[in-house]
Length: 222
Image (cartoon, rainbow, N blue to C red; front, side, top):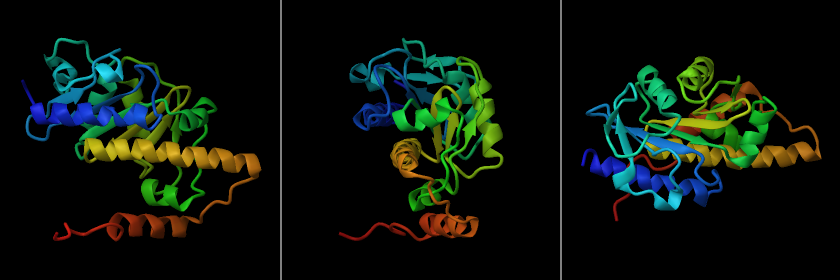
C-alpha cells in the first residue's frame, strides 16, 4: 500500500473534524501531499467518518488522477490539487462547513480582526471569496487569488464553507479548528454591538510574536 504513514495520519486527522463540530454526516475533507512523491492522500467521497480507515484513503497525483484506491476521491479533489500545484510550500488542505464560520460565508462577509487570536493565527481578517462551483478547479482558483493579498491560512467561500491550508496536514486542521472558534466569538460579539478592530500595526506585532516567539523553539529535554 502506497504512503502507509501518510494515510494513517490523514485518517486520524479526519476524526478531529466531527470531534470539533466542524462537519456533519460525510461533508468536509482533508488531504495531504507527500513531499517526496508529490502524491496526495485524500478522503474518499461520501464515506462516513466512523468508516474511514487508512486503507480506504485515496492516493491521487497532482492532477487528480487516482494512483491507488478503490473509492472515488472527494468531490473537491480538483481544487485541492490546484492549490498544491500553485502553492508549493503547503502540504495540507482542509475543507469544512463549520457552523459559525460558514454563517459568515453565507452572507459573503470576512471575519474581521477583532481578537488577538485572529491576529495571531491569521495575521488579519479571515477573508471571504466569491462563489465557485464544486467539482472543478474554480474553488482553488478563488482561494489562490485571495491569498495573493492575505496572510490567512483560512479562506471562506461565499455560500459554501471554509478552506484552510498548512505546511502540514495537522497545521491545516489546526487552522480549521481555530477559524471556527474565533468565528463563534465574533458572531456573539456582533450580537452585543460593534466589535472593536485591532489597529494594523498591532496586528502585525501580534502575528510576528506568535509566529516567531510563541511556543517552544526546540524540544524540551525530559
